[in-house]
Length: 67
Ligand code: SF4
Image 1: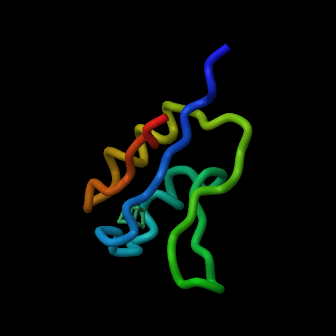
Image 2 (image 1 turned 180 degrees about the vertical axis):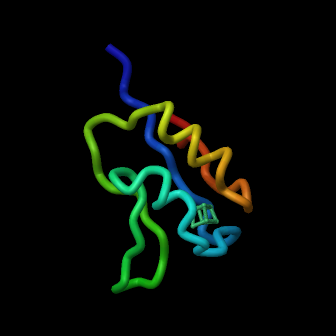
């Protein structure tokens, strides 16, 4: 059994444009408390949605976390 891949965001590059949240609000959200974008804790990440968000991200700062 393989561990599901998890997307992650390079917060130092993220411009907080909100594009990924528009594409995949079930995966990405903005944390008001810390003022940064965060990846929701899910058991499964829809690869198509994540990759759409990757394409949409103007800073190219979404990537798959290395195992
Ligand atoms: S689309 Fe990219 S730059 Fe925009 S908020 Fe999401 S991760 Fe940050």
